[in-house]
Length: 176
Image (cartoon, rainbow, N blue to C red; front, side, top):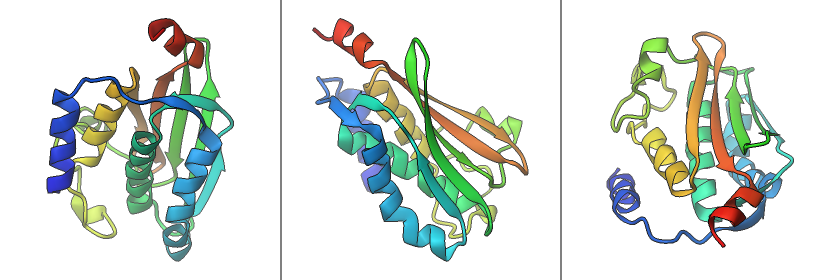
């Protein structure tokens, strides 16, 4: 937890140039999925990488954001459920989405889940290891990338976390 708090403090105070490069988003997601595959298998949850995109990002921070989202999804998806990571490109941005068939988040909680230390109901978590910092970290990472994060959720049906990244040509225009 101390590491997470220090990370948040650094991202909020350190707005220096972030080292970003063009990445194969499918490969980045594949490396995170490989890390979580044994846990998904143990929990009888399917894990699918359907990402087909290039992205301009910091690889380490992208992986940290995706890791936080996958960890949350695994903690809230019951046996027999599924987690799918996929991408959609619009004219304005690239969307990386982590969708699960888990417990979902109430409308009231959706307004607070990005607050530090907030957890809707830790009793429902499989491991009870949540610190309430994961989504705050994801939000900070996305802000460093000039993007944002949003959640869509239906209690009892699952949640989709959406990472919005500027398109590659927009990044080049903004950072000559």
